Amino acid sequence: MPVPTLTNPVRVQSPSTSPATDPILSARNVFKTYRLDRVEVPVLKGASIEVPAGAWVAILGASGSGKSTLMHLLGGLDRPDRDKGEVHFDGRMLSSMSASELDRYRNVSVGFVFQFYHLLPELSVIENALIPAMVLHGRLGFSRRRAELTAHADALLKSFGLGHRLTHRPAQLSGGERQRVAIARALVNDPPVLLADEPTGNLDRHTGEAILDLITRHRAETGRTLVMVTHDPEVAGRADRIVRLEDGRVAG
Image (cartoon, rainbow, N blue to C red):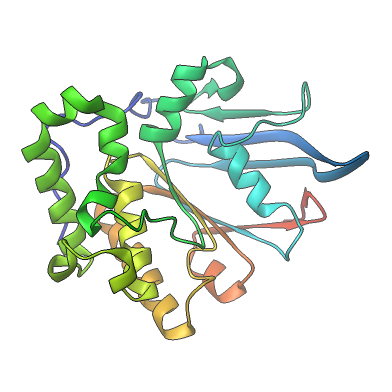
């Protein structure tokens, strides 16, 4: 059952009506080097990727290939090396955004799901799911829209099979249930893009398949763009397109 969207969608901007060939999200010839003590460690070495609106793109690669780093750049969690590549969302370069615009981009235009759930243990399931909405609207704004926002989070969680867990704490949930909460949290602001980094990597095979089924069904219902990082060819095989990373470069 499709989850109803908010009455007034909250986004930095809606995807443009540009031709279908224009990607909603892209990285162009990006390099990323980290410094460990006095040693420079190159991770990305000129990687490029284009993600069409509504597509499911899997970034496949072994550990250390740079796939998580590439996703962090796409999500604005990190920046490419200076003057070495660009990341664009809906035609705008992330490096041209102010700090506040970049914060809104990370809060509203993209949703993040990670291998580890990063739920706050003192909050209930529905409170955890509402965190991005609280950040977006602030204390007063959230108070004014509390009923609407809570109803939206409630519907999202129920569509993920968590209607009986809304008041439970993360410690009372299974791993699969915690990941469902994390996915709901990533989607609560209705972002046009979902970025998922090894979302089944901390789960057993059966539970992981259930999470992938949930993501697949949700995407089919909403048409949301999905970028998923994985080391598992079977997981990547569900995507519309596979981008393979090897040693910091796109291999195919």
